[in-house]
Amino acid sequence: MKVCFETFGCRLNRAEALDQEAEYLADGWELTSSHSDADVIVVRGCSVTRRAQRDCERLIAHIRKKYPLKRLLIEGCIATGHSAKVVVQHTPSALRREKGVVPVPTRTARAYLKVQDGCAGKCSFCIVPKFRGQSKSVDFDAVLDKAKRFIDAGYHEIVVTGCNLSLYASDGKRLPELLAALAALSPDCRIRLGSLEPSDVAIDTVTTMAGNSNVCRFMHIPVQSASNRILTAMKRPYLIKEVRDIVFAIRKQIPDAGIGCDLMTGFPSESDLDFMATRGMLERDPFTRVHVFPYSERPGTSAAALTSVVPPEIRKARARELTLIADKKRTAFARHFIGKATEIVVEDEDTCSGWTSEYLWCSCPNTHQPRKSLVRVLIVESKGHTLIGTAI
Image 1 (cartoon, one colour):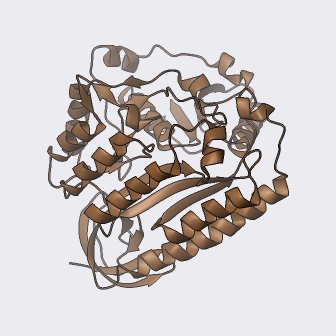
Image 2 (cartoon, one colour):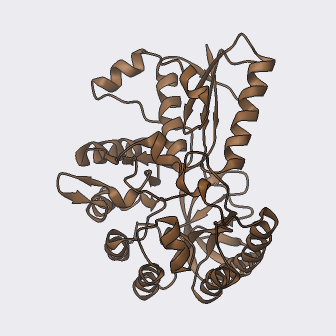
């Protein structure tokens, strides 16, 4: 029996899909990338943006039309009636999970460790809480146990994922304490954080990151806007000063760290002045990896009912403007590493390529190291966002 997975969206979706793949493999199934070969096709959807949902729905419609007799499972966050058609399998893997025995995925270069799900936020533009529900954290000891099994399986990087990592709480421990415990498991395994909402937890996490050399030197913050007026309209639980406090703490404690962010353009009522505040922050502050996207209405959110709509062409034009600025800053950040040493976890054996701790793609030509290897690299040049190095 063969199963094919199609996964959209965030690292959390990716982590869930990989866990599910591991369960199928443990039950004797074979993975395939071909819909025609598969006995079961699993689509893990995403509705965070209108484009993501449209891409999911197009794929689902294509599969149903071309392979009407195949078993199609639709999971994840998908804002359509498709979710009502999901078939829940009670497989031997599910029984193993109930007994606390869960197979570990081994076919990726980096392991994805889900520690939290759900979100207590009430952001006016976000549909995710309608699918994920309230915040739920994985038991602290269970997280460490699974991380140990990843390490035993040969992983040298574990990516910690969740719907809202800043809400992690188990046995009186928060994310900073969890991060420190994960880092202590093995000095040869890097720990990378997924996106972290602006909060006191984020400030404390910076300190934990600075104190543990095997915690990746990168933090991604979903800023969205640098206008306090727009942040309030979005019902985001912070003001821009709190974001800048986190950025300042990172730069003070970990000077060479990468700092990522999400920026949304064209939220309802966003004026030229609001946009200029966001553009000014991006130009001024040391962001090195920026995801820019125009606002898209999500049915069922309070923002979708707002009347002061920014025309789509303005949303897109503003997004293009921010993307150009972000591209230049990332190129300059990459150039900064010439002559310095860093590490990669090999994802592409042919080119000995992988992500640095700071989240820059790096290649080592004429070097051969097996996938998953942790390789020390001296950077000799940069090409755009990409680093070129030699193995030390």
